[in-house]
Amino acid sequence: MTTPEQIQELLTRGVSNVTVQEELEKKLASGTSLRVKHGVDPTTTDLHLGYATIYLKLRDLQELGHTIVFLIGGFTARFGDPTDKDESRPMRTKEEIDEKSREYIDQLSILLDTSKIEVRNNAEWFDTWSFEDGLHLLSNTTVARMLERDMFDRRMKEGKDIRLHEITYPLLQGYDSVELKSDVTVIGTDQTFNELQARPLQEAKGQTPQDLIAMKLLVGTDGTQKMSQSLGNDIKFRDKPNDMYGKVMAVHDDAIFDYFELVTRVPMNDISDMKADVNGGANPRNHKMRLAREIVMLFHGSEAALAAEQAFIDQFQKGKKPETIEEFTTTEQELPLVELLVTSGLSTSKSEARRVIEQGGVRVNDEVQTEVDAIIDLTTSPLLQVGKRHFKQVKKA
Image (cartoon, rainbow, N blue to C red):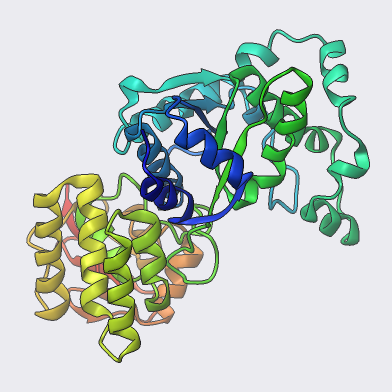
């Protein structure tokens, strides 16, 4: 039996809102094993901490004895959720989605016991539908209702197109809950509109409508926008321990306690004490180091977390270089610095490389390089450094 204290923690920690709270509290207190849905459209091969906020809530529910139904949008991901998008998403193939979904489940196992998860794919039903079946589903709502979404209103004001398939997406997502007989769904707040479409569809089928736990969105390392791989402000599940630790230490101070609440299971009382400590004038650095340690421990274990912390102390507080520096092997005698940064993986694009050089963030053999057009002699196996954390040792093949 779930205690009132457990229910309180479950429905408040990291939670933005619950629909319908009174009903969900009754379901949780009943002792019945609930079917907890969470759906994803696999569009990337790397998950980041923004996803972890939801998966940790799913883990909490799993540990209380509820069944996690993890839904792969094998059908809906082919054209994509329009949420927060100013342009239509590109269409994707079934094969591309299947490949990415395998990556999702593999990474999900870091936080959840995937042996106890029910994995489903909405291609199971949508791929079998006739066009008439789709029209029957669409008859359950109106165009006006679908256009209530703020991003559609924004697009219309800006004179941008809204494709018909985009309008149908929320209803398709809602129908997934009918097929899965979902009791509750855990989502980010940006998915609330879509998941609310499930409730009348379930009622029409004689099901008890699902309740919603909408999680707060995690801000990225830039401190302004939600975490996103496309924005480059993310911390990935598969980041190496030292990189993960360093990225957490780069998180803005005013976001520290949101990270504690959303991406760790440090007791809320401890978080309140730390917040009071900082509000009283204490340096937030020590609490941020605990945050980095907790997050690395979650994904890589305690030994890796302690080693990453020590490496951070050595590099940033004592000025030491990392003990292990990744090598970049090349057959070239020389290369333009911009091209070298991109080909070695220290920059994702030439424009980013130019920007970092101009800002004085690039060193070659410990010397700052500010000339964008510089040519680097590779025969001497130079040491490359971008920022404080990223190194590559050039090796001649």
